[in-house]
Length: 388
Ligand code: SAH
Image 1 (cartoon, protein in one colour):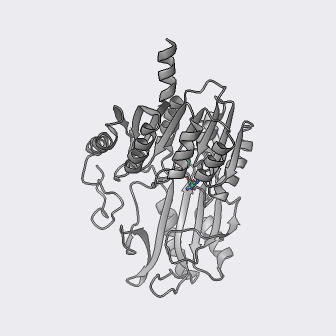
Image 2: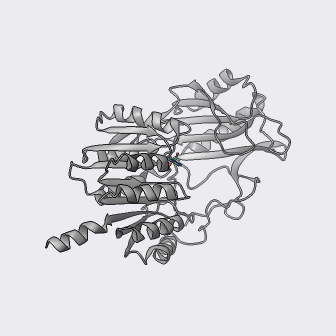
């Protein structure tokens, strides 16, 4: 294990004190405890090199002890722990943050103070395409004029020619680490393009994109395997983000329908489909629950539904409509085994059988556990048994 100097103060890596092997067994035990009642849980898939995997870095800025500092929020507090280098973050991004800290004072850019509401720079978001090497830097500020932006960005780019795009975003709310509605591209095209499973994806600042691309490929490959497509299926990709899962499934399906609530992500998804020449996919900017409800009420059917909700899991409305739509297979990708267990209980009570459960370690050194589950409609099996 690497020895992190911030381990005590920064609460980002909750499992620091365990070896990676121990972390994986702990996650496996958690999955078995929560999901073992539904089906055998296959051995969690870990990383060969569980460091520097994060492609997204969010660093909060503050002025403390007479100098500008940046780092992470201590969990459940608004206290910033200054961090100069992190073992989870993509290599090279710490150098960019260091330069920002050095440059700000000479350009009279002050850190925002949550208590007094004074200052300007709230946080810096960096996204890196692991395969493309593209780097996006987003300056998230309070309301106000970014006076020295031109000269500031020019100097940043001079020192870091590896940066491919720079965006200014304004977050006027009291919630830190959020991106606001207003964005202005200061350099480049305003997004990065990255490659996953052989496809290219454009990702803009506010769109969701999996943070660990190495493990994401493994996760999507499993999702594809669990979907068992033959080329004849209508597939729904619910909570589709920038369309990454749907697009990896499209070549094996008749058609794919993606639904996603974030309009920026849907815009990216549509562009991404064009970028990859995928014609049998459509995206809808809607709440997934409402959309499924409309589909069910119109009597539209789907053969396979892939669902990848946020931590809160699927809404009851979504699950009810999913059951009404009655797809042959459901592939459920989850970043929260607690809500997954809750939703699997509903689905198994309503005609579905859990066939496979597989954990994928997307977030080494943290307590987060991702898993992918394959469910099939029980009616099929019963009918088959009767026919046989
Ligand atoms: N499948 C994608 C994104 C998964 S993250 C991927 O693998 O990259 C979950 C996504 O659900 C986010 O993009 C979020 O914007 C979206 N989301 C959250 N609530 C939603 C809702 N009620 N309806 C539809 N999408 C929602």
